[in-house]
Image 1 (cartoon, rainbow, N blue to C red):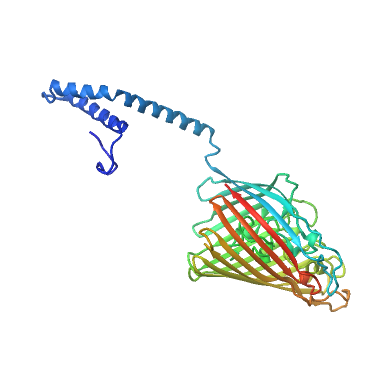
Image 2 (cartoon, rainbow, N blue to C red):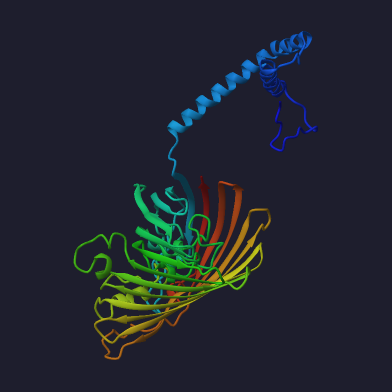
Length: 469
């Protein structure tokens, strides 16, 4: 009369509680009553019935307690069902506390060969960023993301004189809440994943950037340049579509189109909208022959209106962006961007990575053009010092002007390639305090900032605490 465990047996390695015994006894008594009611013979005598009745009375208190507990559980379940957040939506959050300061003798001067004269008067800052993400699924394989954001992490280039010192999670809304992202992703067949970004589109969140330990703004590199290759910054918070095709083998093909710039796609004015304003066409072929090695070939072609050019997501020198914004006068620019990225993981605790990028920018109303080059290497060591912690090292050269073509001598004489070279060196240590708290101290050092060998070395010390829930 007692079924026991799902496999139909009792286990002799644990004792029954009085409540379990009472429930089992009650089931047996119910079965006995059924047998008595349907029996055609004297199967149970009076002494047996008296014994059973005495046992039922003896455990009546436990049975009453069980009924009360079941009633309470049913009431609590009904309350949870009535007040749950959503049957289709999950709420995720992230909060960052950041303490940072830039150090150095002089601010960087972006003029080739000149000596800096402005003092670098950096102050210690304490700032924050908060994100709440609503992630909804209607079919189980799709995802609608609505992300809200508020932050007050002011970019430090105003103090240091260079974008090369920027943090990877900076930005300032004066802690006003805004819709930071709105996108919808779904499967198209078994091998194609489509993502549509309405606002806040970022290629680094849609495709593989080959820098798994440092790509995240909340738990990755502390610097902006150290997160991933600048070729993935071509979407520029815009609106567009990304398609990833994986034929269930070592190859993955990605393609994307973006109207770049926040709210540019929504602007009906001339030289705006989906196709008439700034835009990017992107393609990538990723090859992963085994678990240890992963490599990607990337191409992006961008069109940017006169005076709006930002080729590298504010990671290179000011001169690199200034030269294409002023080919004599502000002009529209088309750039061709080529990238090679790779990751090598010889073990689960060691990751080597890096990228190389080359860009050409062409004046659309004249013959002038310019070329740019950048590279970086990364090292991530997991469980360094303690399980869950990660040591990170990043070294590279931010985007630099390597050649300028001025066939008609329209450009001023100082519009030439950058002869100096900046170097980006970064060390960080991600300490996992719990599943929801991570503390990351680190130091960023920029040698010869702005690709000007006369500039002093600039240091940025940072302590980032990330809460995720």
